[in-house]
Image 1 (cartoon, rainbow, N blue to C red):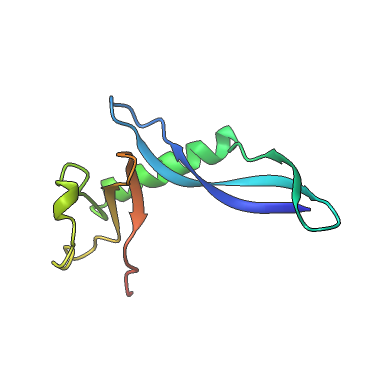
Image 2 (cartoon, helix red, strand yellow):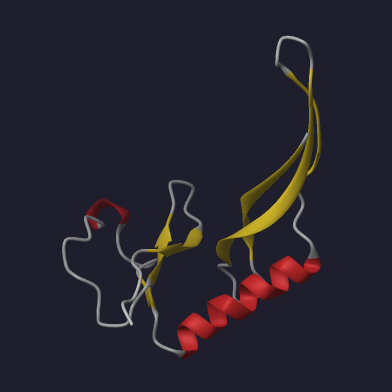
Length: 109
């Protein structure tokens, strides 16, 4: 069967500490009669998908829609304060220490 999914992938935005975002991929999965997975192929994002994700991340920054909290101490990331008006995404560190772009809320028009 063919599966459409998102994988966390580093974006070519520069710097020593890359920004990761979820990028769409296509996978091919084969299962046996019991439903056990036997073959997985694909799962690598295309260059176009990576470039689009990088453009999207840059657009969020250009329009003040992202807050970078990746330098905040991981022990103090309770996020009880409301984000600034217009901020829809945040950059946070995941459990592996990667800087990850995450949607945190939607804007109302």
